[in-house]
Image (cartoon, rainbow, N blue to C red):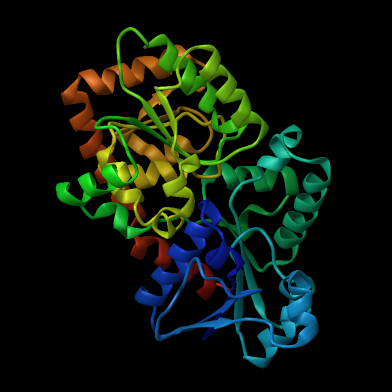
Length: 383
């Protein structure tokens, strides 16, 4: 079978959607090598690459398609799908080409979250309309819908009235590098390269309101006389990030909150932008702090579990699905609970060791092979 993918984010996105796309494509290539995988990419990328005997990158070739690459991706690509005899097309991030249902090519779409429907005030109004139209169209016209969590499945049913039997929950995996132990010499080299402290708590994710970095900083303030351990922040943001930085400045926490993504070395390093050094950073941390109010899945939680890094995360949304019995759960609205968790994990080595072991065991539910197999079963159900 020739299987096609919307690979825009696989080649160009350094955050969650990109990690999901790259990991799934590579996993399918390895564990289901009998198929040919065609990666439809609007333009070449120098940041990420996907190579393999059964992987083939396809970019627009004619002048108009190169000039209007977004139109090629959202509709015109159908001609290339037919030319290459693609039997099934997978929209990896919420959308499928308009009219694909009239080509005879089967289609699958992955829906990661419907946060724009739940929290429209956190988005530009025009973006909400665009997202809603694209997501709803994909859920209506794709042959099958993949939800990355039970939470997302419930949301698809609630907001778009998609029939439950059309939706399959397929959990995602993460880069296997997080499960490989980084030796102390390499961890030390990376700490020195990025000027990292010897000990730190870690936050990874976009600095936006629902991900709740402000309450982590409030927890640090509550602990200011008990723990002298900084927070390392990996992620970018806009207005909300400035709000967080204002709180940090007003409360004298400048030395305790390190915005690593702003450092010159991080901005210019291909290894940082591609997340190649992240496993070493994770494995150098005390704990991952991820008390998000709402997620589609929460991939940094899984990356931390694979890294044998204790996780403090929220008891709401899909995060208990991601963390299982291997995470320390808090009310995301309570800086006091977050502070209590940070203090507990830092001071109680037995609790930290238990979380590491339980987290590692829970992570085995999300191996690359298991995740590739569940997606392949969805494909087979519509062939």
